[in-house]
Length: 287
Image (cartoon, rainbow, N blue to C red; front, top):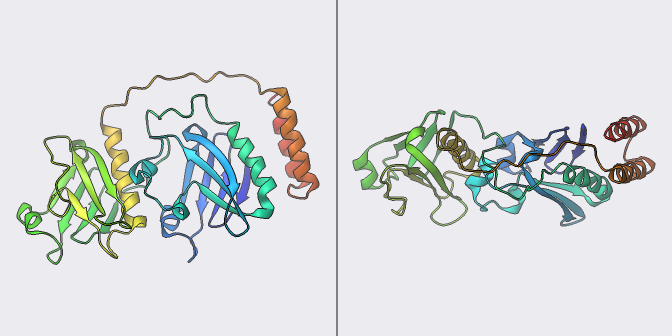
């Protein structure tokens, strides 16, 4: 595609095989967006694309990732507030026609059986080293191991008795993240060997507890995603049947419809002469 769609708090750049999402770092942008900065999402990582009316004269372009394709969304487990969803692009309502065009373009890239879980992470996790302060300790991840160092002002006696903890990635089976925005928020490391994942987080040496002002989403979630991605990279692969994508030319009727839509955008002044010519040539080349 090779085009750009600028929205509120983010800009989507469309390439032939992916979407590069660049997040704003302004004071009004969600802190999670500022922490992520940018993310490249391969088309094969997407399950669906929608365009719906938003609030106060806006429309929302929403790309839904396939289950298991993005370690950040896998770690979040549906706990992110709508405004912090990195796959939502909010635009002024007057750009609805242009947004619909790009939504159609993205839908045309979805692979067959896109609703099936991905057999591996397709979107890169935030890079280590990462660290954040929780209520009862400081968590750090260097890409190979996670360390918890307890604070004497917040850690339970059980954690003090256990001492500071170090967990090699190879010893972990997953991560449990409970948002700091809810009661009993915490980050727990799930261990492969005889671990009690049902213990209270404030008593579990494999967990740090969040509290008001400690372990905020924009610090703790990227941390959880990075650890989860490292664990998936060292653990056994998930059985998955690979479905070959048939190569071939696009439907001429579909190409004609896209060119017609492109012409409407051109006449409305939403696409320049050069952009119209380049995109039309690109579409015709697919016949």
